[in-house]
Length: 283
Length: 103
Image (cartoon, rainbow over all chains, first blue to last red; front, top):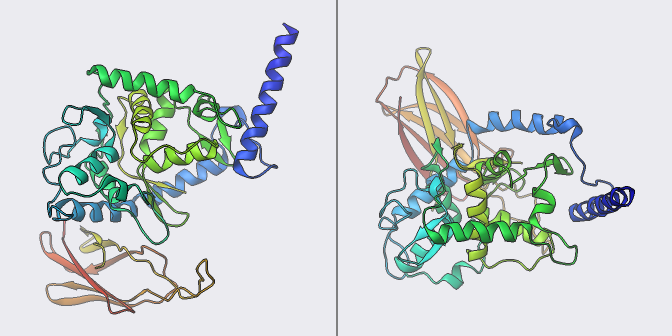
C-alpha cells in the first residue's frame, strides 16, 4: 500500500513539472484550484466576458463569413449556398450543433471547418493544399474558413448540442477520438487527458476543462469559435486542437484531418444536451 | 474593401439606442513589424450616423481608439421600423456604410 502511494506521489510531481514547463514558466506549476472553486481571476474574467458579450467582436467575423458564404468566388465562381452542412443544401440553422457528423457524399465524418473546406474545394474549386498553407488567423490575416465557421456557428446560437451517433462511422469516430484523447506519447509522455482528463486543473490562471465529463466538454465546446482579446484574432477549434498538439510537443495534425474530426466528435458527444451560446470571446 | 459593421438600434426611453461594432485594424503608426520597420498608421478618422437624411452623430476619431471599435450612443426621435445609417471614413480614404432598422 505504501509503495503504491509513493509511486502516485512521484507520478504527480513529474506531471506538475511537465505542465509547468509547458507554460514556459518554471515558477507557475499547474495546480488544483482551491477546493475546486473558481479562482478570483476566473470569476473576474467571467464578469468581463458578460460585458463584452453585448458587443462581441466575434459578430464581425460572422458578418464577414455571411458575406463570404453568399459571394460567388473561386475558380468555379460559385457561392457556398449549395453547401450541405448536414441538414440539406444551404440549411444552416442548427447545423453547427449537430457537427461533426457522417457525410455520405464524402464518405467521412466531418466537423464544421472540414466540411466548409470540402465545400470550398468541391463547389468553388479552391485547392485544399492552398487552404491548408496558412489556415490560422494571424495579425495580418483571418483566413476565409475561419470567418465562414464563425458564421455557420452563429446560426446555431441558443440551440442544443446534439452531435449524432447514429451512423456506424460516427460511433467509430467517437471511439477513435477517445483513444487519441487518452493516448500518451511524445517527448513528455503527454496525452490530451493529462491536462483535460481531470477536474480542477489549470495552467497559470487558465482553468482547464475536463473534457472526459459533460461539464468540461460543454465548457470546451461552448467558447468556440472564439475571439481572442490577445492580438484580436478569431480562432476556431481547428486552431485550438492544433495548438494543444503543439504544446504537447506532438507532431502537428494535418489541417481539417480525420484526427481532429474524431477528437471533436468525442468532445461534442460528451457535451450533448447543452445549449450552445454561439461564437465566444476568449482572453 | 472594408468588412461589414454590426449595428443594433432599438427604441429606448423615448429615444433610440444605437450600438455599432466596426471591423477595423486601427493601427496607430507607432508600432514596428518584425523587421523593425514602422507599421503605417491606419485608423478611422470620421464616423457619422444618419437618420432620415439627417446627421444625428458626427465624430472625429484618432489612433487612440482600439481595434474593432464599439460605439454606443442615444439620439432623440426615431421610430420603430425607420432606418439608421452609419458611415466611417479612414485615413487611407477607405469608406464603409451600413444600415440597420430600428427595433
